[in-house]
Image (cartoon, rainbow, N blue to C red; front, side, top):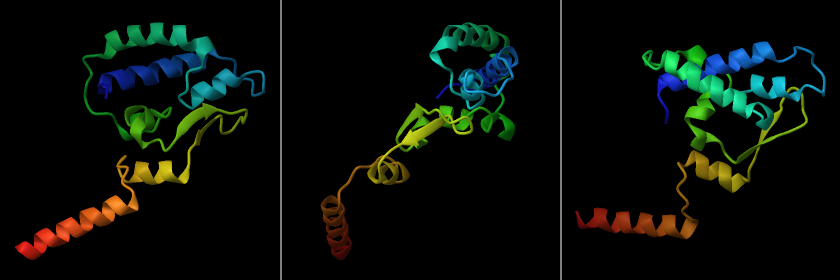
Length: 137
Protein backbone atom coordinates (compact mmCIF):
# COMPACT_ATOMS: atom_id res chain seq x y z
CA UNK A 1 0.00 0.00 0.00
CA UNK A 2 1.27 3.44 -0.92
CA UNK A 3 1.29 6.46 1.39
CA UNK A 4 -1.58 8.92 1.75
CA UNK A 5 0.62 11.46 -0.05
CA UNK A 6 0.80 9.19 -3.10
CA UNK A 7 -3.00 8.86 -3.28
CA UNK A 8 -3.44 12.60 -2.73
CA UNK A 9 -0.99 13.24 -5.61
CA UNK A 10 -2.87 10.69 -7.75
CA UNK A 11 -6.16 12.53 -7.17
CA UNK A 12 -4.55 15.87 -8.08
CA UNK A 13 -3.09 14.41 -11.28
CA UNK A 14 -6.42 12.90 -12.31
CA UNK A 15 -8.07 16.30 -11.74
CA UNK A 16 -5.40 17.93 -13.94
CA UNK A 17 -5.94 15.34 -16.67
CA UNK A 18 -9.70 15.92 -16.48
CA UNK A 19 -9.14 19.65 -17.03
CA UNK A 20 -7.03 18.96 -20.14
CA UNK A 21 -9.37 16.46 -21.76
CA UNK A 22 -12.25 17.71 -23.94
CA UNK A 23 -15.61 17.89 -22.19
CA UNK A 24 -17.66 16.57 -25.13
CA UNK A 25 -19.56 13.41 -24.24
CA UNK A 26 -19.42 11.14 -27.20
CA UNK A 27 -18.01 7.78 -28.13
CA UNK A 28 -14.97 9.45 -29.68
CA UNK A 29 -13.82 10.68 -26.24
CA UNK A 30 -13.57 7.57 -24.04
CA UNK A 31 -10.41 8.83 -22.29
CA UNK A 32 -12.33 11.40 -20.21
CA UNK A 33 -14.86 8.80 -19.10
CA UNK A 34 -12.11 6.35 -18.14
CA UNK A 35 -10.07 8.98 -16.28
CA UNK A 36 -13.23 10.12 -14.46
CA UNK A 37 -13.46 6.57 -13.12
CA UNK A 38 -9.83 6.43 -12.03
CA UNK A 39 -8.59 4.33 -14.94
CA UNK A 40 -5.62 5.72 -16.87
CA UNK A 41 -5.67 4.62 -20.54
CA UNK A 42 -2.40 3.74 -22.25
CA UNK A 43 -2.59 6.90 -24.39
CA UNK A 44 -2.29 9.04 -21.24
CA UNK A 45 0.01 6.79 -19.19
CA UNK A 46 3.27 8.67 -19.94
CA UNK A 47 1.76 12.06 -19.12
CA UNK A 48 0.11 10.61 -16.00
CA UNK A 49 3.41 9.17 -14.76
CA UNK A 50 5.25 12.46 -15.36
CA UNK A 51 2.59 14.52 -13.59
CA UNK A 52 2.36 12.02 -10.73
CA UNK A 53 6.08 12.17 -10.09
CA UNK A 54 6.02 15.98 -9.98
CA UNK A 55 2.86 16.15 -7.85
CA UNK A 56 4.16 13.54 -5.41
CA UNK A 57 7.35 15.54 -4.89
CA UNK A 58 5.18 18.55 -4.05
CA UNK A 59 2.89 16.71 -1.62
CA UNK A 60 5.03 13.99 -0.02
CA UNK A 61 5.24 15.93 3.25
CA UNK A 62 1.44 16.06 3.57
CA UNK A 63 1.01 12.53 4.82
CA UNK A 64 -2.03 13.00 7.05
CA UNK A 65 -4.78 10.40 6.66
CA UNK A 66 -6.99 10.56 3.59
CA UNK A 67 -10.41 12.14 4.02
CA UNK A 68 -13.63 10.40 3.01
CA UNK A 69 -13.69 12.55 -0.14
CA UNK A 70 -10.13 11.49 -1.01
CA UNK A 71 -10.90 7.81 -0.52
CA UNK A 72 -14.08 7.92 -2.61
CA UNK A 73 -12.65 9.98 -5.48
CA UNK A 74 -11.56 8.40 -8.76
CA UNK A 75 -11.68 4.77 -7.59
CA UNK A 76 -9.03 5.46 -4.92
CA UNK A 77 -10.43 2.91 -2.46
CA UNK A 78 -9.90 0.08 -4.95
CA UNK A 79 -6.47 1.48 -5.78
CA UNK A 80 -5.59 1.20 -2.07
CA UNK A 81 -7.20 -2.23 -1.64
CA UNK A 82 -6.91 -4.06 -4.98
CA UNK A 83 -7.53 -7.38 -3.23
CA UNK A 84 -11.16 -6.26 -2.69
CA UNK A 85 -11.88 -6.46 -6.42
CA UNK A 86 -13.70 -9.74 -7.03
CA UNK A 87 -12.38 -10.61 -10.45
CA UNK A 88 -10.62 -8.87 -13.30
CA UNK A 89 -11.30 -5.25 -14.22
CA UNK A 90 -11.57 -4.39 -17.88
CA UNK A 91 -12.67 -1.48 -20.07
CA UNK A 92 -16.09 -1.64 -21.72
CA UNK A 93 -17.74 0.48 -24.39
CA UNK A 94 -20.33 1.82 -21.93
CA UNK A 95 -20.22 5.57 -21.43
CA UNK A 96 -21.74 5.45 -17.93
CA UNK A 97 -19.94 2.34 -16.68
CA UNK A 98 -16.67 2.19 -18.64
CA UNK A 99 -14.95 -0.20 -16.24
CA UNK A 100 -16.48 -3.48 -15.20
CA UNK A 101 -15.34 -6.49 -13.22
CA UNK A 102 -15.62 -9.99 -14.58
CA UNK A 103 -15.46 -12.85 -12.11
CA UNK A 104 -17.09 -16.08 -11.12
CA UNK A 105 -19.16 -16.85 -8.05
CA UNK A 106 -16.15 -18.70 -6.66
CA UNK A 107 -13.97 -15.59 -7.06
CA UNK A 108 -16.54 -13.46 -5.22
CA UNK A 109 -16.87 -15.97 -2.37
CA UNK A 110 -13.06 -16.25 -2.06
CA UNK A 111 -12.72 -12.47 -1.96
CA UNK A 112 -15.33 -12.18 0.79
CA UNK A 113 -13.70 -14.97 2.77
CA UNK A 114 -10.35 -13.20 2.57
CA UNK A 115 -8.77 -15.06 -0.33
CA UNK A 116 -8.79 -18.36 1.58
CA UNK A 117 -9.37 -21.21 -0.80
CA UNK A 118 -10.71 -24.11 1.25
CA UNK A 119 -13.03 -26.63 -0.19
CA UNK A 120 -15.88 -28.17 1.79
CA UNK A 121 -13.93 -31.32 2.72
CA UNK A 122 -11.01 -29.29 4.10
CA UNK A 123 -13.40 -27.18 6.16
CA UNK A 124 -15.18 -30.27 7.52
CA UNK A 125 -11.83 -31.88 8.43
CA UNK A 126 -10.76 -28.69 10.18
CA UNK A 127 -14.06 -28.56 12.04
CA UNK A 128 -13.69 -32.18 13.24
CA UNK A 129 -10.09 -31.52 14.32
CA UNK A 130 -11.15 -28.49 16.37
CA UNK A 131 -14.05 -30.43 17.88
CA UNK A 132 -11.68 -33.26 18.95
CA UNK A 133 -9.32 -30.73 20.51
CA UNK A 134 -12.20 -29.19 22.44
CA UNK A 135 -13.29 -32.63 23.71
CA UNK A 136 -9.76 -33.23 25.08
CA UNK A 137 -10.01 -30.06 27.19
